Amino acid sequence: MWRFGSIGCLLLAGALASGDTPAAQAPSPPQKGSEAQTPDAGIGAVSGSYAYRTHCASCHGADGKGDGPMAENLRFRPPDLTLIAKRNRGQFPADKVFRIVDGRNPLRGHGGSDMPIWGDAFKNADTGYDDAKVKEKVRTLVDYLRTLQVQGK
Image (cartoon, rainbow, N blue to C red; front, side, top):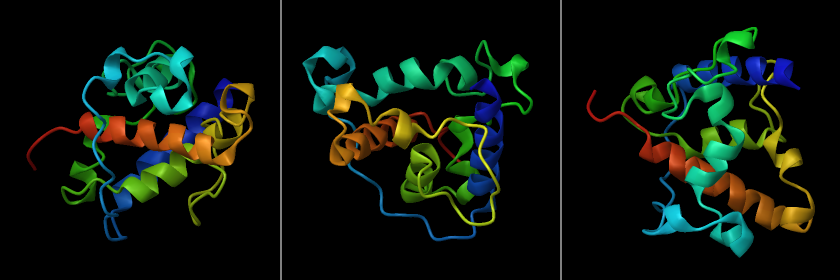
């Protein structure tokens, strides 16, 4: 499973570094207080930060800098997720990031994926196998990644 993570990380870095597509319209920011919510409260209540800590931090690091405890064991170093907007002319490409995280509709020209296909992984009993809930979980994660972006150019 971890070998899948390294290619996905490489793809995420490459796709976001290209910056050749216009930035997508920004999704609404996470709601205040979502940090305290837990997965037990239902999929809509799962915060993006909780999803990140649970599924992403082991490779990308707690702060998103690509320095998670598993990073050294991967074939390719996970990208620094705090620089997504900087690599895209100051714009956070939410739709592009969504497609990369979800993984079920990969971006053309970016090869295979070492990163898990989270859209498939999230389609489980916790989400009731409901694709709308899976997409919402991915969206909360993307919204959280937006909050990690370094400020300035």
